[in-house]
Image (cartoon, rainbow, N blue to C red; front, side):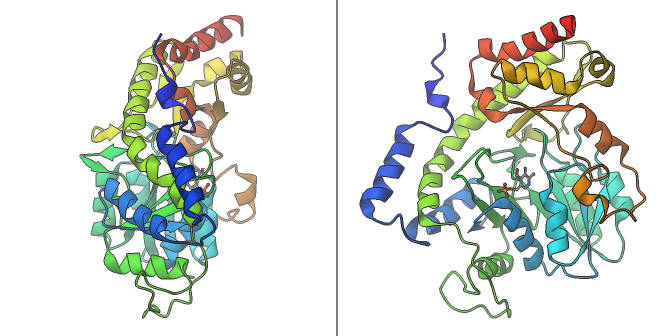
Length: 379
Ligand SMILES: Cc1ncc(COP(=O)(O)O)c(C=O)c1O
């Protein structure tokens, strides 16, 4: 049987042990910030084809900061996918702007460029493309659309460290991108995040918002930004640094697991695998996701399938809520009459498998297909 120990999660590796030991013996672990934070802010964007990075206390706050740095404010509109993790609408509201939802496509449930096009008005300031449920958004088309309409493109890469689209890493396609280093993410320090960009001015603005109005050289910013304290600590940076080097081998492993599972699950009647845009070369690995079609869920409801998978030790999760049905968004968006059929379909049908499972050997990966088949046979 294959030795899978080198792909343990969280990484139980000598590199990690060294990082913990080194920061402990250096005595630097108490510091707000220091050399390790600086190194992380150089190395991580470099590994994602970007020039600059600002480390931040989490991914949710990073979205607020990105919007503020772009000058998004009251009266502006920001276009978001109607099927998403909850962070985005609240960030748009936090800066006083209006979230405008666009439905997702039915292919892989990322934001649909044609729906985005229809939602652009003279008030639109930005589009947020989210790489979610294992899939990458159609970045080239969205970038073109943003450029043609003179609006910003932000990428949400919270689930997509190391992903590649048309030869370039995600995080380098938009004006700004956010990453998360939260507990369940592909690189983790418990709570953390990063903004990446290749624009020096946007970098300085994000830095000033995060670091009490200071610029990287310690001077006070010239933009009139008051700033906050949203920093990542030296201890967290120390834990993240070795994970940048480990990411490539873990990403290759996860991509192979995605292909293997696609091939196995596509043979099961009523399971539909998500298809990808032709320029996607490496996917968003936080959750391997597939569709559990409605004719099957009548036989065995999705939540019961999830229970069976969890019972067998497979970390299976339902998808996210669509903007239309999320109870937290109902009061705020009662006036938005749009329907989002694909987002509701995603909410009904998506099953996600957390990335820790992807690091197993083939025999164990195969149990996912076996349990689905068995469950449906007796369901
Ligand atoms: C797509 C997406 N965006 C943003 C976030 C927020 O990141 P954080 O948990 O670091 O606040 C998450 C978290 O799961 C996410 O999945």
